[in-house]
Amino acid sequence: MIQPLDHVAKIRPYVPGKPLKELERELGLTGSIKLASNENPLGPSKKAVEALSRYLHSEFDLNRYPEGSGYYLKNALSEALSREGLTVGQDQIMLGNGSNELLDIAVRTFVGAGDEAVMAAPSFVVYAMAIQSVGGIPREIPLTDYRHDLTRMADAITSRTKMVFVGNPNNPTGTSNKAAEFEAFMARVPDGVLTVLDEAYFEYVTDPDYPDTLAHFGKDRDILILRTFSKAYGLAGLRIGYGIAPERILTEMNKIREPFNTNTLAQLAALHALSDSEHVKASVRVNETGKQYLYREFQALGLPYVPTQANFIYMPLGRDAKVLYEALLGKGVIVRPVGPKEIRVTIGLPDENRRLVEALRAVTTGGNR
Ligand SMILES: *Cc1c(COP(=O)(O)O)cnc(C)c1O
Image (cartoon, rainbow, N blue to C red; front, side, top):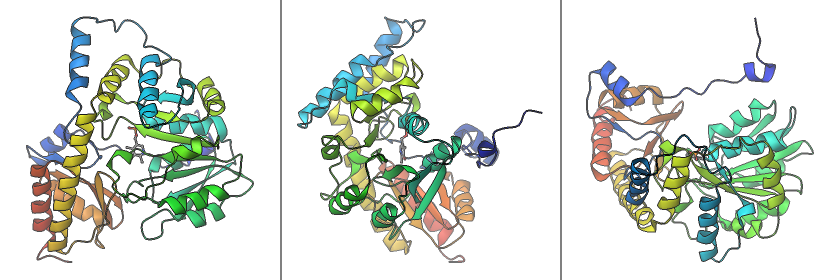
């Protein structure tokens, strides 16, 4: 029988959640809410949806391959960045089937079997998965106070290190590093190590001391900045994200990407979503209101949480997360267990947040705290 490569056999599979409808059928529930995957509760921009609808009704040419270079979207991204005073040319932008794909391409371009990559733990599970998929070795550095310990991460870099992942804000904890910490870290990362800066949630950040990663891009450092249309732009289902890096890095990554890695509808929707800054602002506002509400209610319930810079909240509950997850599920509220005693909840619409609080109150009070 065919056998997988050793390093593949060792990988623990990512277990996707069941479809919502299926789960409801099994539990005999209806109207449950999903606060598990950090999706935008407002949905996508109307402009994006209208563009998709126009496209499907008139120019229907899905028989054609997508625009393989992503010309229009990259152009629009370049213009959007230049409005922030940054010169980022098309050759310094790469599109991916979600920023997830770009992580994977970066790893396949720069990390080989036996090479090391430094990352925080817990952080985004995909970092370790991508490294293991090429036989690389993840070096996981525990968080300090729920944040990346950038000093210890820099200490962990050796001559075998090819890549360092910095999730900022970090998933699942929602924390971000301060500008000074980040600068001190970047000063220690040697040339020849690619720093992957995952900024999937940067639109939600409220900390004025958030690092200016693009300034390092301007210095031609070995960095790859990843952003996405899956979160604040509400397009997770279409799978599209982008990377910003020096051209010399993207030239190599482009050699191994599928020629048509981002699809026609995703490119079109992203282009129109990008022009709808009002929708992003509204999404950030809804998040901020929900965040303050949940903080207050969690405090009132005596439930521990970590203040967030993103659209989700990490709760180190000190009790069995799986049991709590299932109890909440029974109340039609889907959250994500992210550790033995930790859950992560996505900030939803006001009604959803209220339901989360009601469910948490019901399952945590008067019980085995
Ligand atoms: C959601 C998320 C992403 C985005 O993934 P896409 O593939 O763009 O949908 C990237 N990094 C982190 C940490 C995330 O939580």
